[in-house]
Amino acid sequence: MRNTPSPYNRLPRRDFLKQTAAQVLTGTAVAGMLQTQHGVLAGEDAKAKSKPAAGYQLGAFTKSFQDMPIADVCKAFKSIGLDGLDLTVRPKGHILPENAEKELPQACAAAKEAGVKILFLTT
Picture 1 (spheres, helix red, strand yellow):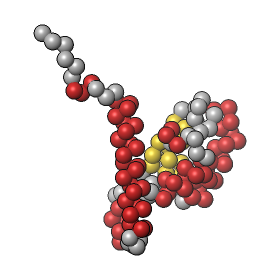
Picture 2 (cartoon, one colour):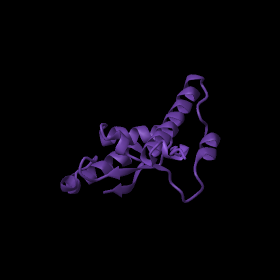
Picture 3 (cartoon, helix red, strand yellow):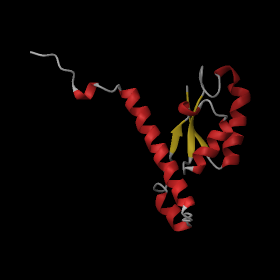
Picture 4 (cartoon, helix red, strand yellow):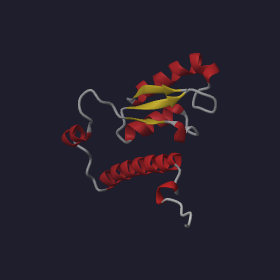
């Protein structure tokens, strides 16, 4: 009997999730750029249709964007239609735990200025 690996074990779960998130974010960004390039700016009706149901907010995890300043991440997330972010507060995160008292209010201000919210803090 041959020991053949299952096709389901070829891609580790974390790699699958990273690739899936990257594809979703890329697809959303490309769709927005194409609309702008072709002069089809989203009107209020189109925006209303693309919003989640009342009471829900859509955000994304910031780990993949840790090389960017928080203010730039907030602006980028807003530009692709997200409502907020899941901010990393941990070693090697956007905010180090020992700096949280000083930097979290700055991050909140940057989010508010960009028109998004900090929906979660991940430690």
